[in-house]
Image (cartoon, rainbow, N blue to C red; front, side):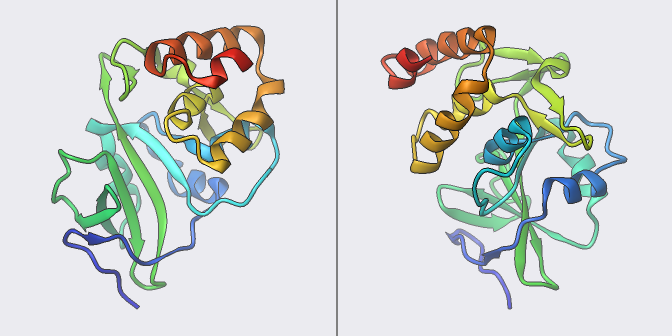
Length: 200
């Protein structure tokens, strides 16, 4: 089984690794990487609350090569707007990079190459929002690094798919008042008028 690329619609099955498996494979990577998106919510909650079709991690864009070096024997695809290209085509246009396991005929991992400056993460949606990596990344009891929930929800707020709404509803009761305040401030700046602002 193969995968089509070169600008065609993204095709190929996803059989994602688990966060623990990714943490094992990336154990020697020194770059500040972390599980992102829906899996990060579950790591924060300490339980798998819903099925996950894929697995995303975030890493500073300039240190993506450390992830590549830690995962030899796989192929990388640049993904964006529902299409994929062989790495490194269009690397400067899209921030997602998918790991293709040619032997098993499936995708394993989606790597977000994130903006950063002077050792700080920079939000893709608003460059005024930045955090030290020590604040951006927390760890699960088993040591898996994950992005803090208010950052995850800031990105989920744009599309508001059913799973995004469900993730928000699940994590909201577990957010401290200061996390709620911070997310409310970010949403007011990035998505003014968003319904989550009142719910926070």
